[in-house]
Length: 363
Ligand code: ADP
Ligand code: CO
Image 1 (cartoon, rainbow, N blue to C red):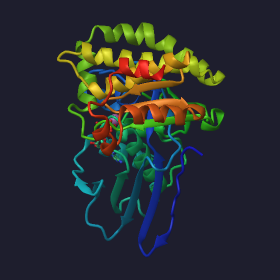
Image 2: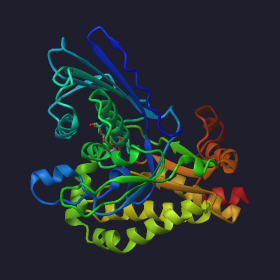
Image 3: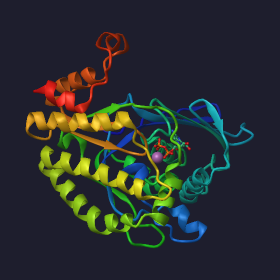
């Protein structure tokens, strides 16, 4: 059960309260969340549509302990609309938020009694926000679902979530999800669809290693814009690499071929960070610890003579690792060895180990 929306449609006095719980989304492949590279179609309104220059593929986490949770209260007694994120009031003067709201209201029945009531939105992420772990995707998927419930909209609203944060259209679905870039200038066919439910590959696990939970240095939107403007490699990647990688990754997921899935996932992550490096001035998201984790994954896979773990990094240093249930315990012992808890680190002195040392020790 990948995405749970529990809707408390209680009408208590004049208040309507809606809850939606959405899981944070992590990419397996292709440009993913923050790295979906956007078409800048020229003109402000087109930029608002958030249409990517290539397809992208992702996996949605099915664990409630890493998720965004949004509550909306609408009431005729409220004087103004407010939006709180992680306990801090945010300005409502946010184009993405107002675009989503406007679209949802456009689809709502004009006879709804609470259509013009003011509301208060409160959203919380129980994982780091703006640290490259796709909070914008989880957050906007959750927000748009909650708004759709508030305004009783039955239609598919994933295209509205896309206007909040591109990747949010994928976060509307559980399991393995493809976002097709589409070809319509108004973005109507730039939509996500599930290619397999989470139950298709129940042994799949995701480990998230939070290297740094600070907010990223550059917003994903700004970074993507700069990549589109300055990276020559980006065009090659979008036209020559992404289409064949996407197709091969979908096949690997369908066949549950972890070996191929892992290789594509890691190559894809490396490719997108190469684009970041090719952006001018470059956007550097990975740090030494990220590289240590990636090297450890390669050392471990070499030791096992096949791919048992795959890493992928979004717009931050935090590692997202895909592995099967059967590898979790052993690989966790490698991670604990590399990054021992503080008191054990005292004992080992000089850690973290180099990955060459790890290869030797694994042997
Ligand atoms: P990330 O890598 O976490 O997705 P981004 O820079 O892409 O980082 O997006 C972070 C921004 O997304 C936040 O500053 C905020 O505007 C928005 N956001 C994050 N979480 C939520 C949420 N739960 N509800 C609404 N908006 C959110
Ligand atoms: Co984001």
